[in-house]
Image 1: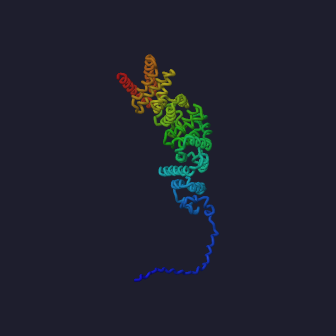
Image 2: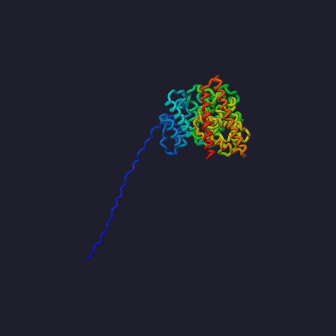
Image 3: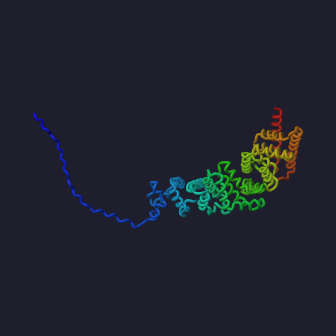
Length: 453
C-alpha cells in the first residue's frame, strides 16, 4: 500500500492598488484684525507652560471676570501664579478700578455703613498685601500708598468732621497690610509713613507749643496716631512698638507732653482736660487711656529687665502738665497702673526721702480705693510693702506716724473747704470728705486686722 503524500499549498495573491495623488487643501485665510489682548497675550496672561485655563483668555474677557469678583476674591486669585499677580497689579493700577473700588466717602450716618466701610478696607489691605508679596518692602510701600496718599480723609488737618471714619479705615487697612511683618520691616513702614505725612515735623510743632493752644492741631495728631498707628493692633506688643517709635526721637519732657496729647483725658466737648486735672479729681474712665499707655511702656521695661528711671522721669514730667495735678488724679493714675508700678513710684520717692509726698499720695490712694470700689486690702498691702523699704524700726515708725498725721491734715483741708461755703463744688467737697472718713475707718480696720494676724 502506497501512502499518498499530501501537501498544503498556501496561495498568496498580490494586489496592486493605484495611489492617486489628492490635491492638498489650501489653509483658511488668517484673520487680519488683531485685538489688544492678542498683541500682548503672552506678556500679560499666565505663563504658557502652566496650562492654566486663563492662558487662552483675551485680556478684555479677563478684565470682565475681575470686574465681577469682590476685592477679597481678587486677592485670593492673585496668589494663583506670578503671571496672574502681574496682571492683577496692572488691573488695580487703572484709574477706573481706583474710582470704582477705593471708597473716599467716610461720613456715614448708620452703624451698618460704618462697619461695611471698615470691612471693605480690611479686604483692600489683604488684596495689596497679596498682590505685592514678591516685591521689596520699599517698592511695595511706594506702590500701595500711591493709591491712597491723596484721599483727603486720610490726611491730617484736611477733614475736621467729627464723625469721619477716614483714620479708622486707614488704620484697619495698614494693620491688615503689615500684619505678620517682622520688626525691621515695620521700622521701614514707620519711616516711610513719617516721610509721607511729615509726622515728626507735625509732632515737633505740637509738643513745643503751649498747653491749650492750637488744640485742633493737637486733636488731629491724636486722632491720626491713635486710629492709624496705635489702636488697630490687637496685641499689646505691637501697640507698644508703634508707641515707642513715636516717643523715641524726643527728650523726656517732650515724651511726657506727647503722651498727654495722645492719651490724656478729653472733655465732653472734645477738648483736652488740661485745667480739670489741676482743679479737681476726674473719674477713673478719664484716666484709663493714659494709664494703659504707661503700662505698655512699663511692661516693656519689665520684659527687658531695664531700669525704670526713664519711665519715672516721664511720669514726673507728666503730672505737672500744664501745672501740678490735683493729688487725687495722681493717685487714681497710680491705682489704674497696678500694684507693681505704683510700688515702684512710691518706693523711689521713699528711698529719696520724700516721706511727706509718699504719705500724701497714700492717703489719696486710700481715698480712690474707697471712691472707685477697690478692696481696701490693696492699699494695706501697699503700705506694708513701703514699710519694708525702710531698714530700721525707728524709720518704719516715723513713716507710719507721718502717714497718720497726713490723714488728719487732709481731713482738715476738706473740712475747711466745705466750711467756707464759697466753693462752686461744695456738694462734691462734702461728698469727698465723707468718702475720706469712711476710707480711713476701713483702712485702719484692715491694717489692724493684718497686724494682729
